[in-house]
Length: 328
Image 1 (cartoon, rainbow, N blue to C red):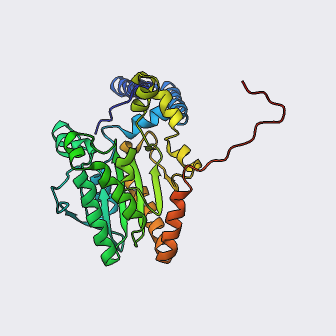
Image 2 (cartoon, helix red, strand yellow):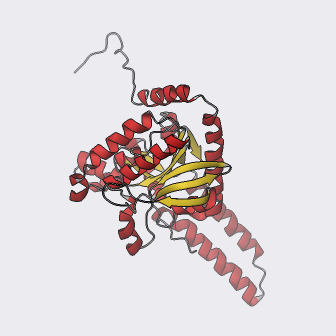
Image 3 (cartoon, helix red, strand yellow):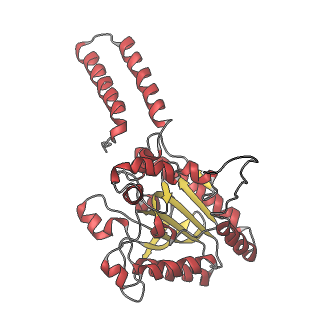
C-alpha cells in the first residue's frame, strides 16, 4: 500500500524519491554511487528523526485522522479471535458506525465495543464517518449489560470525531443516550478497558470511554472538542486550529501528564498506518496486560477505584498571589 504523505512529511518523501532514483541510476548504468547513496541515507534518517521526534499537537491530530490509519476492524483482526458481531439496540436500528460484539482476547472472552470509519465515500456513508447515533450507544450499553450478566469484561476501541449531531440523532436523544452510558459504565460490575486508537472526540468518545484503564496510541488524541471547532469559537476562524490543538492539551503525552489516560501505546515511526501488524501487536499486548491486572482486583474495590479515577479529573489548586503584588 502506497502511503499518502501529510504536508509536513513531504521532505521525507522527497528524499526517499531521490534515494530510489539514485539507486536505480546506479544499477541501470553500473556506476558506483555508494558514497552519494550513504550520504543521502544519512540525511533521510536525520530528517525523519527531526520531524517525527518533534511533532506538534496539530501534526499528531493529522496523523490520528490519516485515511490509511488502521481502524477498529483492522485491530480486531490482529488482536482478537472468534469475532462475532452482534446487531441492534432492540429499540430502533443497528448503527453501522459502532460495530460491536463478542471476541476472544487470548484465553479471555470479551465484549468489544468499537467505532468504525470508512476507507472511501461509500464506506464512510455506511459508517457515517465513525459518528454514532443514539442507537449505537444504546447497542453498546445492551452488550455491556450482557457482559455484566455473564461476567465478561468490556473493551472499547475509540476512534470518532464525535457523536452524530444531526436532526434525527437529536430527535432520538443522543445526549440522553451518552449520559446513560456514562452513568451505567461507572457502576458496571466487570473490568472495563478503553483504548483511543485514532480520534477521541467529545462525548462521542466518552460515551464508551468510562473505564478502569484508559489507553491511547502515541499519535491519537482525546479532547472535549475538535481543534477546528475550538478555533471557530475562540477566534471565530477555523484557521487557528493548530493553536487550539496546542492549548487543548489533547495529545497522548499531555493526557498522560494530566492523568486523563493511564498508558501510551507506542506506534511505528510516522504513525500506525506504517505498520498495521506492529501497531496491532502492541495494542493486543497492552490490552492483555492491563486486563490481567485489573481482573485480579476484587470487583467492589475496582468500582471504587473507577469512581475515584474520574472524580479526580479536572481538580486544580489556586495559589495565593505573592505578598505585595499589585492587581490591575
